[in-house]
Length: 386
Image (cartoon, rainbow, N blue to C red):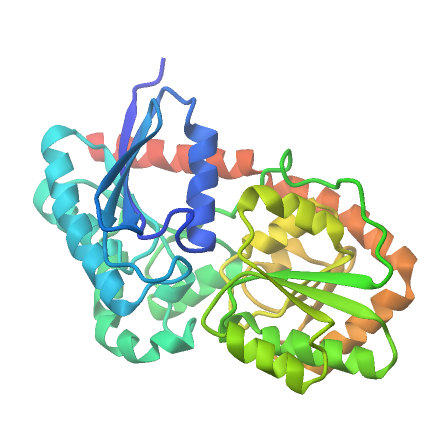
C-alpha cells in the first residue's frame, strides 16, 4: 500500500470565490476526496468576516481566512496582500501540527509567499501552478503592480521544486522570462460525466454562449460587435454572456449603443452545477479573450458537444482544430462575424463540429489531469526523502 502524501495547498480563491483557478482546484478535490493515500489542507480566502474550517471530506480540510473581500469574482491588490500575510501565518501554525511532504500553490501571486517562507524555514518543497496573471502582460490591469512584484514572482519560480503550466503557450511565456526554468505541462481537465451532450433545445434563432468574467481581457466587446454586424445583415441571433464582472455596466451600455440589447443576454453568475444545462441550450460557443492559460469554459463547451469560435490564445491550439471550430485573432470582430455567419448558414457544419468536439474532450478528461498531479506529488515527495 502506497505511503500517505500530506499536502498543504495555498489558493486565494475557491468556489464560490474567483474563477477558473478555483474551479480546477474544486474538480481536483472532487476526484481526490476518496483517495486514502492523499491528505490535503487548503488555506484560502473567506468572503465573510470570520474564519471557517470546512471538512470537505475525510482527507481534505479547507481553512478559510477573512481578507475583507468585497467581490466574489476578483480580488483587489489589498485583498491579495492580506491573503498572502494571513496564509503565511496560518501555514506556519499548521506546520507545527502536521508533517507535510510538500506544499502546492495555485499561483505565485499571492500564494507564493507562504510556500517560499515554509521552504526557507521548514525545508518543505513546493510546486507552483502558474496562474495567468502571474505572467507580466497577461492582465493589463496589473501592469503597474508587476513592476513592483516581478522580482518576487521570479524568486518564487526559481526556488520551486516544480513549475506547472496549463498549456504550451503558457510554458513558452514562462521560459521567455527565465529560460532555465523547467516547466511541466498539466492540462486543465473536464468532468465528461457531468459535461456531456444533453437533449438539445431547438432554438428559433441561433444561440451563442460565452461564459467568462465580464472584464476587458475576456473580449466581450468583440462579440457584441460581431452580433451587431450579423443583425445588420438580417440574421437573427442571441448571445448569452454568462458571468459577472467590473465591465458589466459598460457592456450593457455598449450593447444599447450597437442596437443589440435584445440580442445580448446578460445571465449573470450561474453555479457550476447549472452550466451543463446552459451549454446544451446553445448552438455555438464563443471565447473572444485576449489572454488565457487554458479556458475551463472552452473545455466544458467542447465536452458538451458545441462547435467553437475562439481566439488564438493559450490552450486553444490544444483543444481546437479544423475539425471542431475556428480560431481568430483577439479583437478581430470582422473575423468573428465571418466565422459565425459561415456557421449559421451551414447547420450541418454545426452538427459535425459538435460531434468532433465530444471526441476532442476525451483527451482532457479530469481523470487524466488528476493522474498527472498524483504522479507529480509522488515525485516531489520521493525527491525530498533522498
